[in-house]
Image (cartoon, rainbow, N blue to C red; front, top):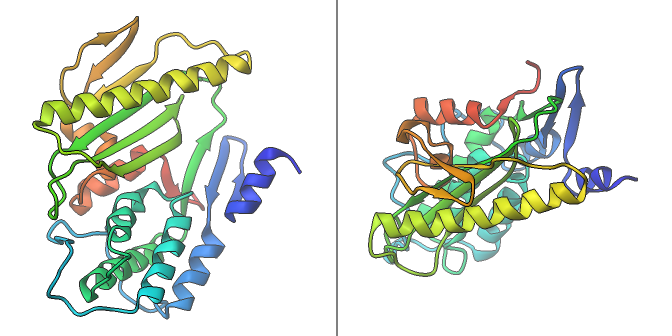
Length: 261
């Protein structure tokens, strides 16, 4: 079995091929998950987390079974291998595994309900030979309710295809939005350079790499940092809850679409 085949098997990924490209999903796994939690007839929200939801430690809330909650989070984390649209919401719920409350379980179950409505969706990979490297990065400064630490989001493209994504809550507190953006951009540049070297090892030479941020950070060593409007920042989906209309625009831009399209 090839390396790609082994990875596909290990993650439970399903690959559907057409003349234009490939669609990768975890459809069977998601169906079994919805059935396991008896959500086959539930209403499905358009987003995995509401903009009005404020997930926090909830010290006064009713506790729930640790084992059940951790099992649910583990299952959801497994699904992020093909669903970057749930990465932020799952990561937020995962922060409270040591002492989960009823409010945390409700938030996690909303993600399940969202998954029920997106079972037929997957990531689209075009056969286009364009191999330029680009990335989007964003930081939600002091966005965590409990400790005011920042959450960063990064997504990386080879040509038009999304190949890597990250949503991370950081351990330190930034003193300003600008500081948070610079730190995230620096880490993103490091990842881009690593990807460039990896492609070079396969004989694929890269020219200019582009990093898109929604503030002006300048230019680095011949590669460029492009300023982008906030409403077109793809990494926003990895840092904060979004309204349904904008959320759906961004998942389409990331290459998430119905498998039967």
